[in-house]
Length: 335
Image (cartoon, rainbow, N blue to C red; front, top):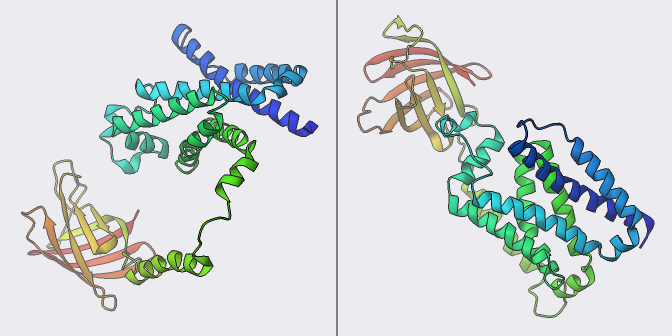
């Protein structure tokens, strides 16, 4: 084993141990201290001490590095799993759940989604605990690492693409790297199992047909966004109804304030409140700008919309027409 590889293994073990110890120390401080979480001084100090100890005792460490690394990772994953089972992770304040989803940051939106089904959240926790248990035994360690790889990979991707805090993302990445290391130690055995040359094969042509045929079918369906130049959310400005200019709405007013043009030619008119909406479908003549809409919700919405849309500039349209018996004029500004 080369020197660089030995150093990398010691560093990986130190980083994993530092993350685990940091979580435990922070929790103790939160419960029994003044509930002030300091900067990660303890984690940095722990990392230095663990790496130093690993380097000093590298012969013993390297002789059993898989067990040491797996033990720290199992402790960390088990803590995450039990936190999920006892609702100590991923909770969103009840008051915030009544706010519009579009106002949620990515991390809060993710927790709100997973929190909608407590059994599913528990299942993720049980998978983490089960995988941690498997990592603790030499005979099941490889199976445990393979078992946990899709779980941790999914968590890493959620952290990256939904804007979790950098520390959480780095933590998940370290666990993923640890699992990959525990798996690749058995690379030759895995290659013999997954890349065997026996068995019948349909050939490259059949494989390409199976993959490309669904793509052709999907492309033949066309895009659901039939009017991309119009699709979006618009704020209604300078609204005039029957020649009377509407002022600033109060909470009790039901004047038109927002218009949504959605995919599939759906349209939504919002009258100053989420509880006052008309939802329907529209037809647009792209040449003349004539737009006609009918409503399917609420049942009481019977007045058809017939207007002409003139593009003023990018993200701004001039609307002129009628809604039922009322003449409308307004500017639509894209948000």
